[in-house]
Amino acid sequence: MRSAPLIAMTTAIAGLAILISVSVRYMDVFDIDSVRVVGMDSIPASVEAMLSSCYGVNRFALDESALEERIEANPLVDSCVLSYDWPARLVVALVRSPQDVLVSDGEGLYLMDSGEVQEVAAEDLPADRKDLCTVEVSKSFMDYMKRYGAPSSFLDILDLVAEVSQEYSWLITRMKYDNNTADGFGQLVLGLDPLHSELYVREPVSRQRISDSIRVIGQSMEEDPAGKIDFQTTHWDLYSKALVRRTVE
Image 1 (cartoon, one colour):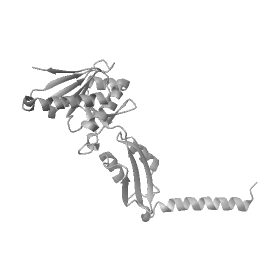
Image 2 (cartoon, helix red, strand yellow; image 1 turned 90 degrees about the horizontal axis):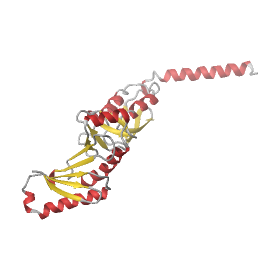
Image 3 (cartoon, helix red, strand yellow; image 1 turned 90 degrees about the vertical axis):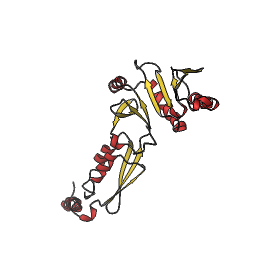
C-alpha cells in the first residue's frame, strides 16, 4: 500500500498539472496569431475558412484531431497534420489528393476516390484549374455511380485520361465519356478543336495508342492545306487495331 505522504504528493502533482493545463488556456501568449500552410500551392476555400476560424483560439483549447478530420474530409486533400511553432503559430501540413481528374455531370463536379463519388465545391477548385482536367458524363451514369460506385472500367478511363491530358493539354479541349449500361468500355470522346477534329475511342487502348493517333490526326491536318481553313469537324474512330477517319456531313 502507498504511504500517506506518497499519496498526498501524487495528488498534489496531479492537481498542479490540472491547474497549469487550465491556466495556459487563458494566457494570451498562446492564442493563435498566425497560420502557415505547407504542401499545397492552392488551398481550397473551405479549408481556408476552417483555418481562419482558428485565429485568436488558444492552442491548448483547439481540438487538433477534430480539425484534421474536418480538413481531410475535403476531396482535394489527402491528409492533414497540425503542429505549432512556438508560441502560437499554427502550422498546417497538407498533402493534395492524388486524384487529378474531375468528373462533371452538368450539375456538379466530382472526384473518384477508390470508386466512391466525392462532390467538390466549385469554390474549392484552383482559379485556373491547370492541374485538373474534366471528363463529362451523363446525369444517369453519375446517378448510377453515386448509388453503386464507379465501375472499374471507368476508373481505368480516368487513369488513361490523366496520362493523355498531361501530354496534350494544349490540344484537348473537351473530354466526354458515354456508357449507358455501366458495363464494358463505353466510349471516350476527345475534342481536338485546334485540329478541327474529334477522336472517338471505342475500345480499350493504351495511352501510347491515343498519343500516336493524335499525332496522326495532326499530321493529316498539316498535309491537307484545305483542312486549315475548313472548319468542318472531322471525326476519327480509334479501335484497338485501327484508326478510321470519317467526315460527318
